[in-house]
Structure formats: C-alpha cells, structure tokens
Image 1: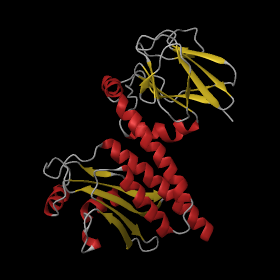
Image 2 (image 1 turned 45 degrees about the vertical axis):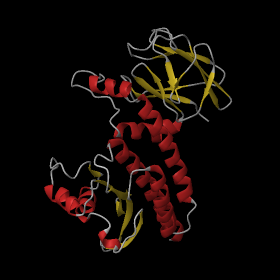
Image 3 (image 1 turned 30 degrees about the vertical axis):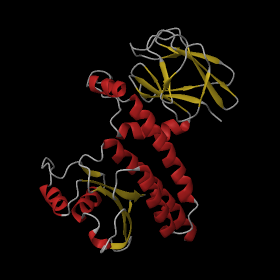
Length: 309
C-alpha cells in the first residue's frame, strides 16, 4: 500500500509526495525540507509527518500560523493521528493524505471553487482563491465530513439489488445531507428512447401529482447541457434563461438545483432538489456535493446493469 501526501490547493497544486513508513518527514517552506511548500504563510519548518503501519501521525513544529486538522488547530509539539481524506490546512495551502484525497476530496474542492488559477506566464494562486481558503476553513471541514458521508453512500448503493432500490436509498441519503430541501425528485430516462420512464421522490409535504413536484424547465436544461444547474433565488432575474425563473416563481419555489446522472456517456436521468421557503437555500458547494453523489449513483447503476447482463 502506497502512502502519499497531496497538495490539493496551493502553488504546487496536484503535486504528490511518497511517504515511506518509518521515515520522519519535515514539511515547510525551507529549501532543505523533505517536503517543500511554496507558500509565504507557511513556516520554514511547519510540521513533521510520519507513517507507522498504515497510520499517519503529524506534529506541528511551533509554526507561526498553525496547522489545522479536522477543524481544530494542532497543539505544537503534540503528535496527532490524521485519517486519510481529512484536509490539512497550513497557511493558504490545503493538503490531503491517501488516495481518497486525490480521488474524492480534490475534485470536490475544485467544484466548490477552491482551485489554483494560472496566468499565461506562470502558475500562481489567485488572490481570491487564497482568501477563499482563509475564509472558509470551517466550510472545508464541514464539507469534508459530508463528503465522507457520501463515500458511505456509495457503499450503501453498491449493496442494492435493483435500480429502484439504489434510487430509494439515494433519496434517503440526499434528505439526510441537505437539511434545507423540501423535495427531492429522481427522474429516470429510458436508455433506448431517451424519454422519461419513471419518477421517484421524497417530499416534506403531501403531493397530489408527482409529475408536478419538480420544475421541468430546470431539469431539461441540466439534461440538455449535461451539467449541474442551480437557481439560488427565483425572484432575481439574473440568469440566462428567464423562462426557468418565471416557472419557478409560478410554482412558488424559492431555490432549486438539478444535476444529471450520467456515466460512460449514458444519460440515466437527473437528481432535482428544491426549497420552497429559502431563497439562496443552496450554494456552489451544495451543487458540487450533489454532483459527487450523482456520480456515485451512476457507478452503482452501471455495475448493477453489468451484473444483470
């Protein structure tokens, strides 16, 4: 098993460092360190890390701006075990341990807007990205916890015995993750005809007609563009398609988002959620998380289809 430290956000974003079990690595800005972090907010000798067995141990070395793990600042000189996939923040740099950091946490941070911007001359961190990391440390930790829950969702979905069971479990977990939603609808598309074949939903209020529980214009746009679509506030006409905001207003929906369920170039359907009460009920991070969950559902559906064929 390989043990790696990844730079998820920072000047060397995407770079990884192989950690050999038993060896003590010094991480910081100094050029003689085992792992060099190009961040002026990182101390020359910031923290040390060691792998023992399959466990990671970190100790802050009295850094000026601290080492943050799991939402808490480490006590200098006190060794702390860190799990794979948990973000480590030093200065304006976000690090991650293990392959799960590369496969799940990194794409999520990118989708949520925590990524490096590059100009045409050299790779630099945009000031707004630096400020975003600084302002949103707590957000990163909260979303990481949610992402870990979505990792568990994949395991739950993989245990399902048919597509309907996958989608029922998906609905349950979406409601658990997104506290502000009033309704969640999964629209299933027939692979052969491309037409709607089924709808399953959850709603906090009784529903008279399932076909009127979601905004068709928003779903159609997400499926046509094959990417997530979000309306933060239906009362603000700042979006490209006023038809969507007008239809949301008519349905008395304050905010909504929809992500396609797509895998291996097969359009399987879409996940739609809305809030009837809260304008600005969702933000980019929610779309990123829902899109992550959609991808896991698509993989589970693909695997089940292969088993049945």
